[in-house]
Amino acid sequence: MLFTSIKPMLVASGDEAFDDDDYLFEPKWDGGRILLHKQGERIEAYTRDGQLVTAKFPELKEVAKSIKAYAVILDCEGIVLRGGRPVFDDFAYRGRISLSAKIKQAVLTHPAVFVAFDILLAEKECWNEPLSERKKRLSAIVDTSSSLMATMSVEGKGTILASLMKERNMEGIVAKRKNSKYIQDTVSPDWLKIKHDKTIDVMILGYREEPFSLIIGLNFRTVKNKPVGLVSDGFSQADKDLILSLSKELHTVKEVKTQWIRPELCCRIDYRDRTDTHQLRMTVFRGLLRDKRSEECVWES
Image (cartoon, rainbow, N blue to C red; front, top):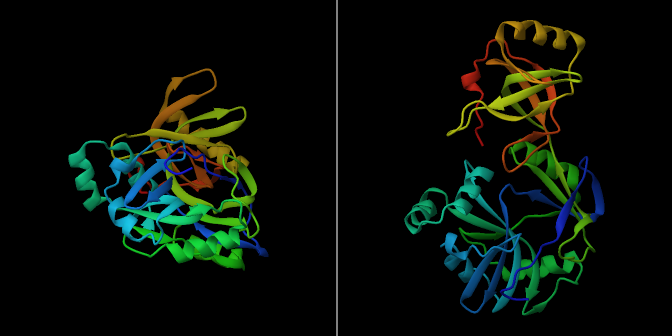
């Protein structure tokens, strides 16, 4: 098991935060899944799809010193903090770079932290134990440092933790049954990710009339006016009529289903999730922003 690729246990999607004494609730960290394997002084890092990425993270030398066991496998989320909260794009940057000079610089500008939330091996395999027992092992083995920590968890009180995570602009929470075993390469209903809606201002790049929907976009550091999804929900008839009226002056290319327009209209939306390529999902229209300029619609995370 040590130093071999392991496909981790995955979370299913939940709807709303809840309270239940049979569950532990944890923050949902916004980074990348990393499994850490350690034996003696050797430590290796694997992604969820089995890629060996140890060389990308010089911080692992310090991580190894913070693990109080000779042989261990930790399931972690690798994160990079900005302003006290994890930013997915920053950790994704760490995963992309491969030149040693850039990696050395990134340790200073984008330092990685590994948040351990489960343990598969602690001298012997323990993935078949209940989660509550694995958490005790994890707490005893991980010595918090600048590069490694065990995630916090609360028993039973999911709604309070969800509210706290929303206040701190975190993604949401994960609910896990206390008696759940670690089943590799499985999307388990015993683990539920529960995300809260986020609000963002976007530009309108085009629209479709049947059914009515908007193609929305954002500006990124290296890409301007990038399409990031569709919005089909939340419109009143008055909203639709106003958007169509304002768009007439902005028409550009007409495709089979889509009328593209110049990016001069902006609107506010809620969204629940986003993909690794910044496509926004579960979107809801909240209103036009007549006084906002498209240049101000920027992805800031």
